Length: 450
Image (tube, rainbow, N blue to C red; front, side, top):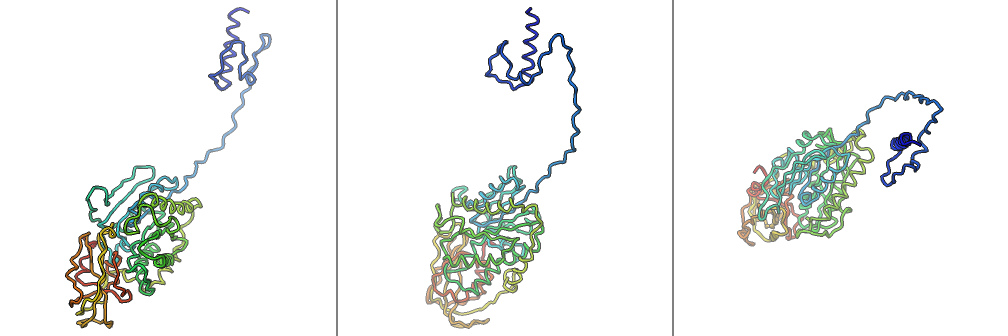
């Protein structure tokens, strides 16, 4: 064979191999070797046979393509108290942002809050927080706008005072599909000694803090499809019976639209890295708590929550109606008052500063023997007065109150006071007596309009 025909034959075989097969760089080139893809390549025609052109088939008509449907994505609003500031809020926020079904997350955490702290109306409409504030806002997949002012950011620095965001405003601004409420820890302060339950009194008090928010969610939150109320995890400062009592009052509002998550089943007590108050904690247990809540939310998302019609709110309205007449805190109003002359006969000791943190206010309970009712009505021979023990972490001068001394006291009913959910120490053993607060102390509450 001459060189030219041999060259052309080799060139043609290599060309067909490259065009018809995967390239294998480990294969050694050999002019005489069979091409790995030879079986799929057309045979080279003999010189005596005419080359016939292959018949070209017209491509089959393609069906018109339909644009893929975009699955709806949810916007989530999260509000929380001091436990949220300890890590729960940040972890839940970051995990939610990683969920492909979540479009945006807006998280607001304010220390020392109770449910009505987040409302535009009521006794705490002007509530401020001075023990920690944190906001995280933005769309998923984007860098969130974050503002943090909490203890520990700088050595010796205390948080500034911040107005508590109002739920009405947040709903109007963000139009969330899902609302997560982590709140209720501070309602445990209603149980002065951490163990005694007075069903009639405590039921009315707790409902007064819950019903105004529930009514708002049922009537003025059109974008919401689901609400999750995250109840407090185990608190070492109250008995299990007290926590059961609180949970049952929150659960009274539960329905398809509003689910209550009992946090006590998500993490075990005692916690690692528990603070001296036996209630706040940080670290891995906080992350585990947030993960447990996220699993509940993710389950509903996977079952088509976002594509369903808004869940009915009538059951929530019915639960609110049952508490009619018990919502004393829906609007500021005059509370029963009395002026007495009374002798101090017993008093509780202030909480230590380490047990007070992260809060800045606390109260003590003093028992007085009534010597004279100057004005108003009071029938018992003894009465209990709640006195501020700390304001902005500064101890009050309680040494001026000596057992055996008599005082003229202008008093307001303590129920409905902004001080009512402040942490306090009760060692006097007179829990059954209706508590009062001095008028001048009522006006010194630091978180109103400052």
